[in-house]
Image (cartoon, rainbow, N blue to C red; front, side, top):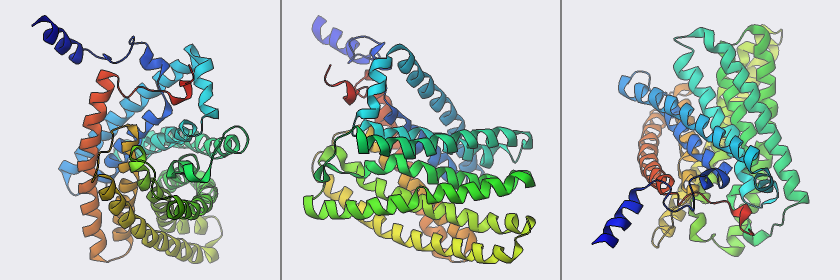
Length: 379
């Protein structure tokens, strides 16, 4: 009787699968920030329904929870760099874990978006806070988009048959910042609006063309070498992320950009820029529809067998959420009822997926099974 009892007690004790609780810091890796991306995009998606108080309030609650989550993860990761510097710096040379550095600015971007959606309408004095956070987010995103690929070129080892869509993570962060900038523009002072609009276009250009190029290579890789193993099942959704975010950024710039250019003596360009941005956004949304269907089929194939749970499952959330928000934005810009119907269905699907992944993440975090640092494997 004592053995089952002690086993049961050990099973409910936090971090029971770790040698000591402090290992949660030593083994904390940037892919945990994917949870803030998934939680944040669900909050933003709920925020697209201001006429439904229950959903909008739920979105605000998730946004506040996400702030706490991001703060906790930032404290844990910063502590790891301070107390375990030699191990933490190995992430830059690791061929897969370094890709997750892009999750940090993307998680922060969802918080900036939440400030715009939930806080600024009631407290306009928070605009400077959102503006400062956006600059921080844009700087981190651009740094990830340059430093991580440079490390791939110089310090990491990669092979075509090992490629997965996680290669997109550090690159996509810049276009996520671009979409956040476009969302923030209407609330800024006129002197800052043009700066943020131009930088948002530039951040978009630093990301989307590279991501589309990688998607071509990814399609060839899957044709020649078939799908990755089951542990990377969720990575098929990551391909949808840059397409959806690129579309969302263009749609937001099409909505807010013309007035900015007109106010700065460039009214003769405003209509052309708005039309081009809208067209690009619609085309990318259509391309995303193909990847959405492909991701669903690939996921169903994986789940015919056993798919081990890991933090990578958060990849099921953010790309789906961005595509849902993009679809709802299209419904706002173009009077075509199916956009609203599809967007609402996607948000409902996102909520279900988030509940599943967050529940399993909470259990894995409690027991300590999700704390693992592949870059320390040689130790």
